[in-house]
Length: 329
View 1: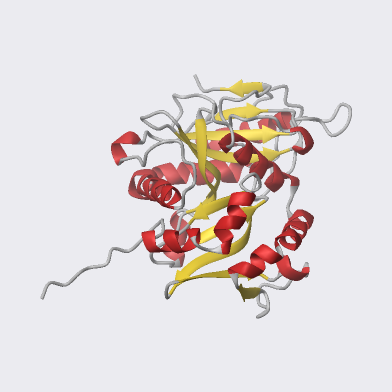
View 2: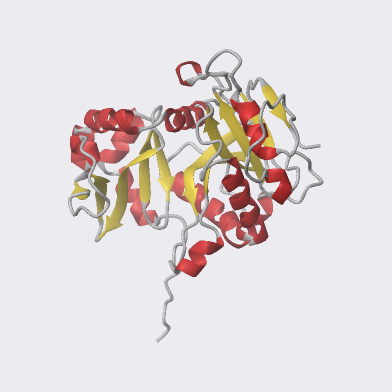
């Protein structure tokens, strides 16, 4: 007797999962609120994002759609990470019935950066004339073997992954910054460059992400999401480009530094971009070179906009109306 080997899904969902979801109450909810919800494809499950905040984990078990949430979205109470009450199994219909409460609690918790990230993605994907389509948010490499050694290889994330609509597809791996927050410190620009550089060195694009992109798009099309191109093959996908997008590029008070000037203090060994003060710690340039030059080992494009959360009008995430674009030459 021939043995059938079931292929493990490393990023994506089955056709049966997609079919069951399209018959569930959650699909109707998503259809009514496409302007504020995003479906993230994961390793045989999905995350439902509002404010780029995962308000529900959706799985498919024994022929049924099942959901799990952080109980915070129900009652607005923050539970400790070790609290048994933190995670809560909930029926899809309950999420639909209490959706407005979920939104309120997410709005209370989410940062301006997360809200801006969500708005930027949804505005772009709602624009038929955009050159790009965002296929994922809050991307984290999902490991087959979650050992500490493997996690140490690459434990970073990408805020947004976008593909160009034209074939061959360009790939934009995007980090979003909002205002002066999180430019320095443990989650600042230095850490992101370090992670992106490691991502390239370890070959995770060819070894993991390229195939994951194919599976994500395939699953999105199975779900009926309006992806504006056919499911790509590996030959259709180009080497990734890295982007840092900064919104609210405004000084908080008179004579203070703009986020661009603050970022320059962490990037360079000299006061470029009208930088007023260099970081007292090692700069990005001292360890990784000048990442604004395309002859550097790792390089990125920097996009800056003065638009704030209240008035974001950028409807093309890469080629839209930014105040300034610093493109490596």
